[in-house]
Amino acid sequence: MKLCVIVPWITQSRGGTENVGHAMANAMAGRGHEVHVLTFDPERQPARWPLAADIRLHHVTATEPGRQDDALMLLLASIGPDLVVGLHMNRTFLQYVRAARRVGIPVVLSEHIDPHFPRRIGTFTEPERWAAFQGATRIHLLVDAFRETLPAHLQPRIRVVPNTVPEAPVQADPDGPEDGRCTLVTVARLVPRKNMRRLLQEFASVAPAHPDWVLRVVGDGPLRGTLERDAAALGLETRVEFAGELDDVYPELARAQAFVLPSLFEGFPMVSLEAMAHGLPVVGYRLCNGINVQVLHEETGLLAERPTEAGGLARTLDRLMGDAALRRRLGAAGRARYRADYAPDVVAARWEELFTEAVAAGPAPRPELETRLEAALDRLVHTETP
Image 1 (cartoon, rainbow, N blue to C red):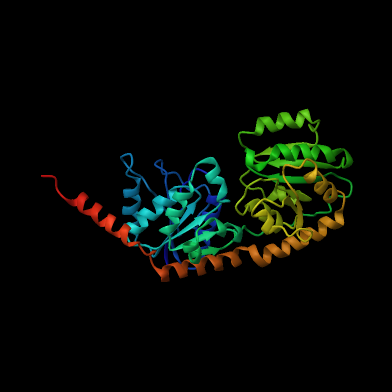
Image 2 (cartoon, one colour; image 1 turned 90 degrees about the vertical axis):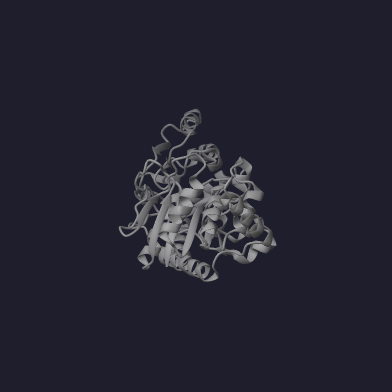
């Protein structure tokens, strides 16, 4: 297959969507497919996630405002792919569909967040989302729970495939050093939905009972200063470490004894998968989509109850921090689950199956009214004004 994978900001961000896009492109190239990655970046910067040497990176640029659709359509027409795979979680999906349908190419739309979240912050309304998916040959969602957000007529197009992360070259030791400190690590962008202020409060309530533990916060964002002030106000200056944003978090995970992600909303978080790959027990909230699929409560990690309930996360952390045998058991089971369900070879095979199916199906059918409207618009565009 010849694939065009659209990752709109892979030259500007190292976020989760960009991470998935580069992994997807590299996996398909590794399986012998011709892969092109398209990005929206007028500065023509290189990809911030490494792409395989045989993948060509294309920059969609438009010299005039409002002409990006045309630029994308012309680029797709010049490449001539068998399939367009568009990643993101907002109204750029509409742009992918418009361009792909204008040149008659099937398209897979790949959504990478809890679909309720973009609606709450106004980046993607429900009508826009449904309109975009109406033009998709196949719809890629991350967990089964997200199926219910789409209408019945789109259900046959949905395929659920989880995310993947690379293998861990070094496994963590959930026991920790015999005469040294233990580390509870979290990795997240420091924004409100990651719920880090709650984590600091909950950790503060259990820290006195576990003087040999520190909380290490890996990541950066607009709340960094607020969180540092919170830590000081809670008396945690020596118990909480802010590592900042790191290009490679694997060494941090390899040194830790447990992992926590207190997010309110996720799609299928990569960092918790990375912790599982390292053999770390994972703690999160039961109501957080993605986490509640990855973590089997009492088997591969622990799920706290309601995020608004003070003390719920603290009780969960207290139990884990005080029981090395429990950490070992949960970490080993999480590692086995990662290998069985989320390892790169497992997920790449499912991506390839999805893309092959979409190519065979061809472009999504156009409703009769839509076809008539497009024909009328074409006539207007190409009719010369007297």
